[in-house]
Every structure is written in C-alpha cells, then in structure tokens.
Image (tube, rainbow, N blue to C red; front, side):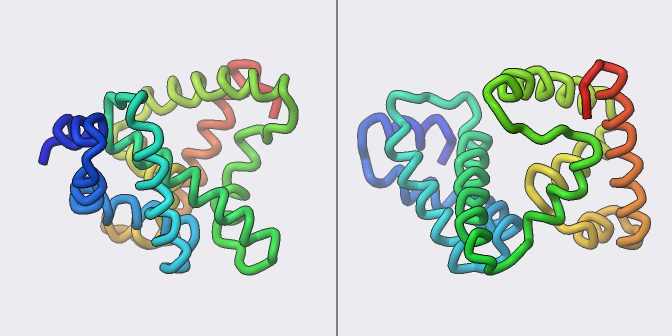
Length: 185
C-alpha cells in the first residue's frame, strides 16, 4: 500500500492504518530501535510506542515523507528509552555513537544553545550536501540510524578498521567545516 493511502487511513481513523504501517515499515522501525537499544524487547516496545504516537499525531499532522516521519519518532523514542535504561546503568550502547561525535559537535545545554542548535543543524546539512553520495549515506547510517561500523564495512567491502578510519576522517572534516563557520566546539 502506498504511503498516501496509509495516511488517509489514519485520517479516517481506520485501525487498518496501524496494520499497514507495521507491514510496510515494521522492520525499518525495529532496525532503528535495535541500533540504539540492542535489546529486542526494548526495541519492540519502542516500535509499538511509535505506532501509538503516529496514531495520535495523524491527524492533524500530514507528513510529506511517512518513512522519515516514522524514523524520527522511533529514533526519539529509542533514545528516550535508552536514557531511562542508562540511568539504571543497564547498558551503554548509545554512548559509543555520541562519544564519536563529541569532538566535532558541541553539546546542547541551555535555551540559547537550542537556538544555536538549529543553526548547527543547517551547517551539518550543508556539509552533508557537499559530501560524495557514498560518504553522506555512510555518515547518516552511522550517526542517525546507529548502524555498526562492521556492518557498514561489510557493505563497502572493506575491513572494520578501514571503515573506522573513514568515519574518523569524515568527523574531522565536519569539525573543520564547523570551525570555519564559526561554531565553537
């Protein structure tokens, strides 16, 4: 079923929308949640919460990209779940991703920094747009979807060490670009 048809089901408050969403995007959502959480039961809970949130947001929201809409919801839900679990010291999966970006992206702390974060987002998008397509895809898959370095290496036909070095070079390029834009790191 096409995305627009699924969205129309949400607008008509037809519960088939949930079934169709799960059928078309269930594995996509689960993959994102698993990349953040690594525990299947927690990831499945976030996917279910994603369906619930989607039901509550459509209508009135009518997303342009249904897949991106779901991806953002499941990612945010997974990060929230991670933070709740991390507070209980259960595991540290997301720390690796965030620590890799610490050197090239400043941490948010207060309201002023949230305003600056929007500007930072624009700069990052500008930087991403200037990358070769393969580098852009790898960077997004690693730092948005949280995919493991060894999985990305396998897709590119290189070793995990080579992929780690490639990611390091990309982060260094991002850091240099942001510094040139005047972003204080």
